[in-house]
Length: 264
Image (cartoon, rainbow, N blue to C red; front, top):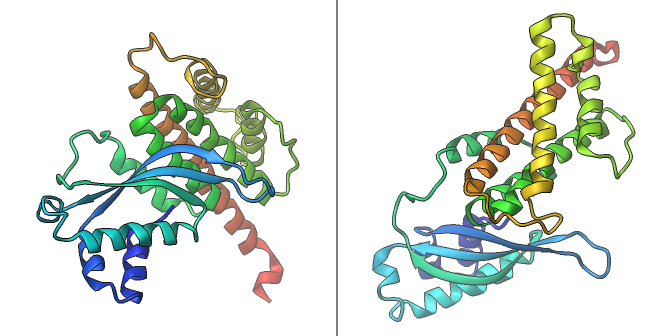
């Protein structure tokens, strides 16, 4: 996703310092629109509307700073061509400080994002965050995608084959087996129960996605708590995925330390 700091740097390189100084005081707020698939079979592109929230003194006198705002919009469109996203529209809005409409778990999401170093999983997270604020139906689909992407990444790393059409329950079962987290691999009753519950939670996210999500054109009409359910699903998916990635990294480090060739 396009970062504000990258656009500021782009403006300074072009010696458009007035525009860069204004943008450095702004914030980017993305709204996910759709995902495009190029005709040439290239990488899919996420499409966003971008709101640039700027300080009051600039927003209330945009005519005075018109050339700077024009330069900012042009720079955003130019920079977006270098990342796997497309900006459909750029809109300017007042910066109000701490948003009162943010979900209470936003800080936890940011912490999880900092621990994830797999690009396609991080993209799934970013898409989930954007959808959560404006599209809870789509956020449920993203929650399932986070777990699927995590499972496939771990299986690829472990060189374990899986079918491209494998469902989430099959993927999580394979990953738990690889990470020695399958309930059948443990004797302790409480551990087995906890791991079994995790599988049930993953299955529940997939069920919610099919019943309430956007993937099958289903309607969320009549579900009064959809935003809260989506928020819960995303954060549960994130915590499960983060745990699986950490355990996978830990086991990989142990294998490398136990490999005699690494000590020669």
